[in-house]
Length: 358
Image: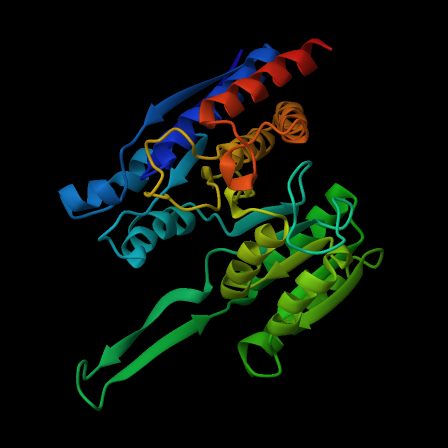
């Protein structure tokens, strides 16, 4: 019996509902496997924790998390707590300290979900976006002078390293090979950002030469956003910097019908440190506690976590059950259904059991 130790951080709002829901699905897949068990330790680190303690997590929070096999996070955000507090106080320290330099988000039009794009089906929207997750535009370097005066000066620095840029681009190419995809697309803006983006383009070109069997192209970020909307079928794997990847990984789920079902994986590819899995949606305090939150993004995160931890068959089982549940129309109201959170969970669990017994 393989035992995996998971740090469970529900966070705020609906995260307190979606994380338990996701855990039920993961556990059902592990039970079906027969040789796997997940053990969880819960942490109440969140914006509510910040209000009480003045910090998003304890001073030794990262050391506490370090021994775990993975981190399963819900959502953070609470009225009155600025977004930069939750980002820089919890999420970014975890991503950076644990070298989770890959942010991976699959963009897929799932069965039964309607895209806002006319005349597009599941065969048109199925690609992967890879975001550099540790440096770039979110490097926390800069400052302010003469604050509050007419002479105020604000500087924000962008840091690109050859090591960081090359490893994320190489990860994109390797993932394309692993998943049988044919094209890698680079997000750039070298016509306007005249140092970092030409450098990014150079490294992309160098790495691309090592993968002659793959097609490559690049688009300026503004044109690329437009092309996501007009030609989503063009893409297989898309790689971008921290900022550009951040933009694309929200636009992608939007064209796939709902940010509410979109997953996100913050990956340490070497498994030297734990990776972290979190849905794209926010904490939605307006519906928290009503039992109507969509758990599918969290469930999809669970499938990605199982795959990253070396159990791809379990992850695939979860995804097959999730797709069948969506195809049957068992969904929450945000994507046109009538089910509540637990009804969706029960439906996915039932399908896991049926598929495992088939």
